[in-house]
Image (cartoon, rainbow, N blue to C red; front, side, top):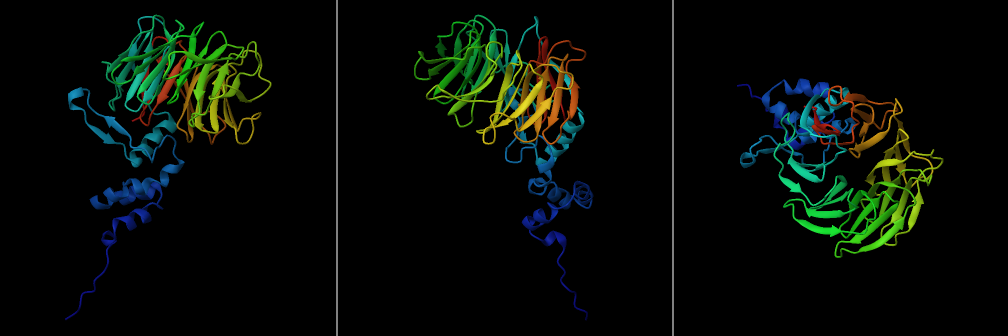
Amino acid sequence: MLEVENKLALLDLPYVVLYEIFSYLSIADLGRLAQVCRSLRVISGHDTVWRKTSECFINVHVDKYIATSTRENENHERYFAVSIKEQCHISYNWTHGHCQDITLKKFGVHLIPWIQLDDDLLYIAQGCVIKGHQVLLKKRGYMRQPRVNLTGHHRDVCRFAVHGDQVVAGGRDGVVLVWNKETGELLQNLSGCNDEATCVDMTDDVIIAGTRDGYVNMWNKTSDECTQSLAVQDRVWSIQISPCQSYFASGTSCITNRQPLKLWDIQSGKMTGILGQNYRKGAGILDIQWETPSTLLACGYDSFIRLWDTRTSYQTPALTFEEPDNYTFYCMQSDNKYLIASGSSNCGMARLWDKRRVNVMQNIYVGRNSWSPVYSLQFNTIHLYAALSNGLHVLNFI
């Protein structure tokens, strides 16, 4: 009798070995492999296989669990993680501008809104109230009924920031308020601003606010009294604290002082550096975002987005992106990797930038022939939320 030789089949290998082998395949080869059988389809779609491939995609988070709700009923929410393979597919839509524009909310009056995305909640400043809405995977983007309402301001909220379990906001009434973001309970009512509190941020111990009359005020969380008041000598439009929480960046209007972007030490209150030189008059900084403790993005009236690296130079930015039509940049957000999304004064124009390119990657008009600037925007893997003067919109990239 002939003896049958025992041959090792591909699927007899341990999954860990298969993951490593398949991770070297191209996207086209992974697609062909997935068509062979169900087992190979499951294995070829595993996160470990797609981790290396995802390194060249924008807005893909391989080290973050992205949970998204799929139901609108609060009593029957269902969450699942977006796989790396699916994130790569969605990233292709971002790169090529494939999205659907949906109106989430229309405002009764024209506003200058500010929004911030915090995990599964989208906070929006609408007049003197900040509302927190549950984010959804569905095309509509979020629950219409807010989960929390943050009230207490008597005039419009200029800007706010979410840190930990708290929200801090500054308003045109010159008051800085702090709430618990889950319950909406007002925790602190801070005075000391003689003019509008145009921008705010906070650490675990300190609250910082910039004012229209050219001051940066600081409070300890344990006290309602203003501990420091720094004279910036120009209107303060933006404040952003470094991730290490030891210093912060301030952006001013560049009217009376031609050095609009400065770094400050939080503990001593002393200025530690000035970023850039030869700014023209009026080239104010409207938005700042720290990517790491040593790198930050800044944009504003001079139609440039600049990436600064404090380890290399305070005078020359590491990267520069210019608005093609010379419009003002009101806001921006980075995925801390390759993608930058910006909102400009150009009639609802949102632009997507890839740091590996010089020119704009995609131009997207938000709001269907809207004449409003994009005052604020935030994005996650699936959605880009844009706040215009007449309403809130979402771009769905699924």
